Image 1 (tube, one colour):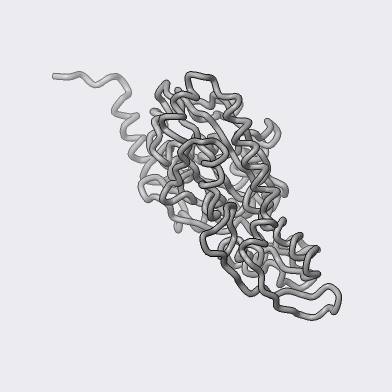
Image 2: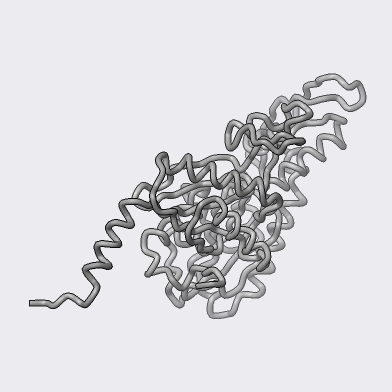
Length: 356
């Protein structure tokens, strides 16, 4: 008869008790959207990273989709803001409130024990920025906070063998950052992190239309243009759409038609920055791993990868296969969820807090 190790029964009971009263959480805290994964339940929340606050009292009026609907439409006293900029926290207090609200929305009911939380961060962030993320999560109600680099989480979410000695290259284009990394043996061998993503594309569109047409449009309109007719590579059939904004000369609302060719010109600068970053990452890749990438190609994830023709442009630039995954928006949170489901197996990829 097998003898139980001293104290192991108590540990097992505590583990079952613990699982009963707490839900561990994985969070993809993005510049544009925040996704929450709960152990055993999968993705339970996908909300815009936007908060509407009163400018004078700092009272929060709305969070997530309700706050995003207010962007550009609020009275002077209310401000709809994104508390994260370029993948890192720009407003600590508002981020903390937003995290707490999202955790409460995801959990549905209160638990006796605060959750452990794993959060994704850009690979290029500083120690100060990492500490800001940890502190925000702890103040929002986490009992323990672990961080994981976004490229590794995305690679795990896609199903790449990150623990093998072979090289896997991933490009993760988010709202505020583009992460390009070569991963092997549970670590990033070389990477390039640039603070260019979907938001910079939207800003480029706003600037182009303002400069060429004296028409002022909002960020949400720019995002809609990018999604509907935006492209990084010449299309077989060019597209057009109607754009509404305010005429800066006459000061009245105005409508114009814009083509996908013009949108491509507007997006050229941020797209070129991404292309140059990919080239630089490849130039810094060790030869043995570069050979693996030639065989396997490059995997592209993140919402920014959905821009039409971006895969073709990068394929032409690198002469390598570019593989766009089926659900690029969910790869990072699904990868973080896999880490959460089996923390022991993924110990090597977790960036532990200073006290661990």
